[in-house]
Image 1 (spheres, rainbow, N blue to C red):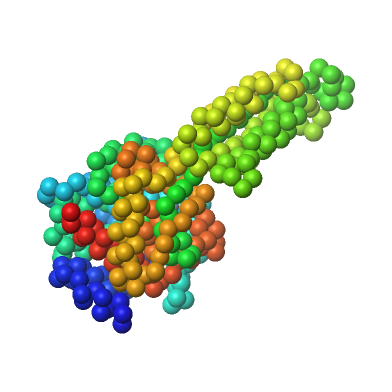
Image 2: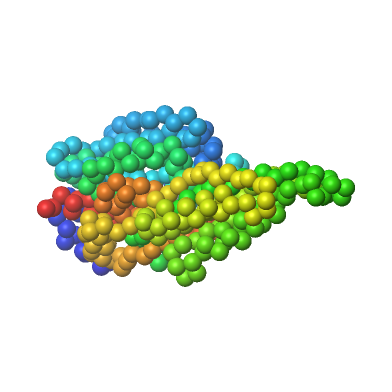
Length: 393
Ligand SMILES: [Zn+2]
């Protein structure tokens, strides 16, 4: 009731947008179900593009044309804009890929118990994609927004956005605001800081030899990997912002061969951009040092996220969003997380950015993932009304 009353207090176009969204919950859930039931792992280009088709067809149904930037390896990038005018562009960002393998959507399709919805990617972040589409449709219908509002939907975020990063950065340059629709935290909070991450692969070469008859002639790449791993983990700053995790290891040829090769993957996380160089240098030094004489090693960066850091402009945008959310009865705040997202890229090019403005959910990247159904409409309203208020000086 309180919510309905306060929305009525808004100016007419805000009222119309909020009301139109409040009447769309069933349609929202049905589009969400359609998206969840399409497998779209990052490496499943066909699936990620099918999710894109579903979104494009929804937008077309609301009179919003979209364009497609082809990406050869991963899902194509989709861009749609509504509104024109003098104000700088407002960007609604989302990723269509999930971390789940092919067949997951068939094994556990979209399901709702009336309170929560379940299924692969239901929160991270198919609900956010769906929300962005409805917000754009609402603004087109009732908004009379000053300046263009765009959605940008990518297909490779879960693996560090190797193909979309320049497209995202380009779209964010000069944007008045960027809203990334990662799921709202369990508490409903949005996210105001994220760590940066560098994903690396370390490959070690040694020398094979029979481990019974010629042990002394061998050079063990696995022993070297073990010694390097201990030093890599020693870079961790407990309670601090820096973590280094060796997440995968492999190597060797047979039980009775001194291992000629070994590898590991490394996930480095850090809080502020100034720290990156020092940490990467430390990892390079461990790579270059042969703790087992005769071994050699090579380090490759396979993916990277920039930290999402505060700026005065982002904080001002956050204040506007949180105040708007309060007016429709949402008591939310902002919090930090170690998880990475595309918001780091948009913030790094100077665009005022808010992250985790999507509907509320948790358990991402696991079968326990869920979405709070009654958060869908209010989060869409909070976003749409914030955008309308960006008109004001
Ligand atoms: Zn996500």
